Structure formats: C-alpha cells, structure tokens
Image 1 (cartoon, helix red, strand yellow):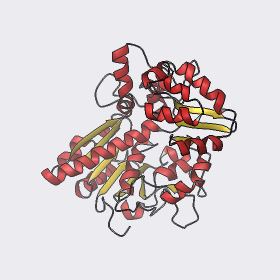
Image 2: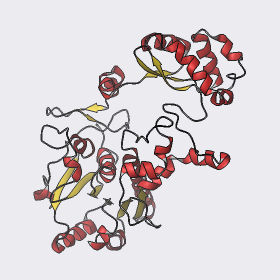
Image 3: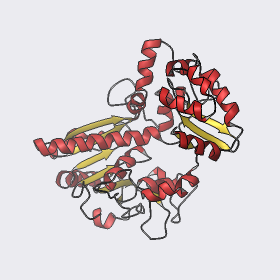
Image 4: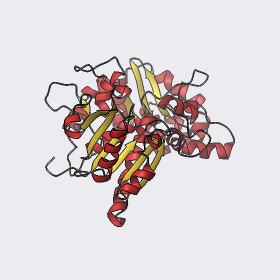
Amino acid sequence: MGEALPLSGITVFEFGSNVAGPYAGFVLAQLGADVVKFERLEGDDARNWGPPFAEDGTATIFHAINRDKKSVAIDLKDPAVQQNLRDRIANEADVVVQNLRPGAMQRLGLDADRLIEENPRLIYCNLHAFGDTGPLSNRPGYDALMQAFGGIMSVTGEPNRAPVRCGISVIDMGTGMWCTIGILSALFRRQLTGKGGKVDAALFETAVGWMNFYSADYQVTGQPPAQLGSGVRGIAPYQAFECSDGWLIIAASNDRLFDKLADAMGHEEWKYDERFRTNPQRAANRDILIPIMTEILIRQPRAHWQGILDDAGVPNAPTQDIGEVLQHPQTLASGMVQNNGDGGIDLIGLPLKFDGERPPLRNRAPALGADNAAEG
C-alpha cells in the first residue's frame, strides 16, 4: 500500500493457539500491527492440524491465520522467561491477546490486572471459552462445543436429521473479530484518555450473540425455532432449489421480488394466490410453495434459470465449492486471493480496503521460533 497501514507502529503480543486468538492476531497483523506470536516450545497445536499440509510441512490452516506474524518459541513455565515477558510487555507492548486455558495467565503472573498496573497504557484482551464469570467460566471450550451449547446447531441443517456444525469455525473466527473490535475501540479510547484497559470476549457469548433474532422469536412464540436447511425463518422463497445439474439459491425476500419471480417462472397466478400473496402468507405456506417451485426448476439446468432470473431482476446464485469460488472472475477481480510471489499457496486477504487498496500479503506464517534471535 502507498500509505502506512492503519495500525502501523502498534505492537501486539499474542499468546494464542488453535483458531480464535490467532484469528484476532491475524486481523491486527493485516491492519499493520507488529504481531509477535509467543508459542510453546512444541508450537501451536494448529501447526499439526492436517492433512493437508503446505510445502513446508505446516498445516494449511496455520498458514491461513498466522501470516504476517513473528514467532517466538518459549518455555512459559520458566520464571526467567516470565519475568522477561513482563518486562517486555511493560516497555514495548500496546496490546496483549491471550486465549490460554482459564487461569493459565494468572498462574504465570501474566494476567491483565498485573500487567496493566505495570503498563497503564496496555490493552489486554482475554478470549475466554464461556466468559469471565458464571458456573462454567473455568471450563475450556472449542468451536463445535459452542455451536452446540449456544444453540446454533439447533437451527442448522435439515429437520429430523443429525445435528450439523457450520462448516467454518464461525464461533472461533467470530470471537476473534469481537476481540479485534474491542481492541480497536480501546485503542481509540486510549487516544482520548491515555489509559489502556481490559477487553473480554468469549466463544459462548459469540454463539449466543449470533442467535439474537432467534431469541426474540422464541420469546414471542414460546417455540424453539425449526431447522430450515438452506432456508431462512420468516422469508419465503429464500433457499436453495434443485435444478437438473445442481443447486441454485433464489432469494425473493419481499413481495415485489416474488411478483417478478412468478412472472419469470411463467406462473403469474401465484401473485394473486391467497397462500402466496404476501411474505407472511408464503412463509406460513412454504411447505406448499417450495415443492411447486422445485417441480418446475428441476427440469432445467442452473444456467437456464440464472439467465431468466437475472433478466427479471430476481437475486440468485449457484452453490459453489471453494474451487469454483477461487476461479470465479469476481473473486479474481476482488484481489482477495493473495500471493507474495514466493511460490507458496495462495492465501485469502482481509475483506477490507483502505483508500481502494487491500492490505497485502507481506510475509507467510513464520516457522516455529523463527524470530527467537530477534525477539526472544
């Protein structure tokens, strides 16, 4: 980028493993912060979460969320190492991000209260499993556990089938984003007050937060929400439909779009059918509407219906696998797929631009302890 990245000059010490904490560090690094990742001597577990592995033998997931960081491998149980870290944090760090097991940082003497007392400008972010209070606060947690415990699996997948986890680590990465939002807010507050402070986020709270409109629904109806597959509660038709060669999402999210859809599919009478005339009526009668539409759509390939719906102004999209996504002209034009020319795998960039430019891929994920000499 022609200009400095927004967080240039900010130093972040990351005590993170797996996905959630490192994802927060990834975002901060992409925004320009100098992120030093402190790892156990055996390394972050995610280094071995494969196959697949990249050309250097490190799991691809580690590369995806640890790019543009430095790695220092240390023995956190060593009192001398602990003291060195306290000194460095007091003198160098703007931000600490940690997602170690509950109580670990306190036992090491690296907890927020102690470090903020020594460095009042420090912003210290705890990424918890269940939160810093409550009967489960001392339990560890992982993405799949929170998708289950926080209710997300109850609304994911097809009805009367086994529970389905969202295919991405939506809780881990979502909590990492909340950490980033909290840290950025605290940095802004520090500009005003000169003081740092503590930021807390939790996997469980992220899961509950994502369930916000289902919570509102339940309080009004008293009924747990249903699983709708690719559909959406309260809107119909808004889901994937089977065509002769695959699946096509059709999103007629209001009455105007449904009228266009009815005309495009050659069934103008749907617009006047009392079962389908308004969105609440369509949502209540989705079990009637969806099979009628499917019977028509399945006769032709996706491209046939895409052309018709595009011409009619009805939003639609084919379901694509990641290979199709990476090869699509829109993806290529966006610049989201990045490579620094060293022959390594392509990596996905930050979905943000500043003055028209996306933060670049500067360095790949570091080898374990690659920066011990410079940062140790």
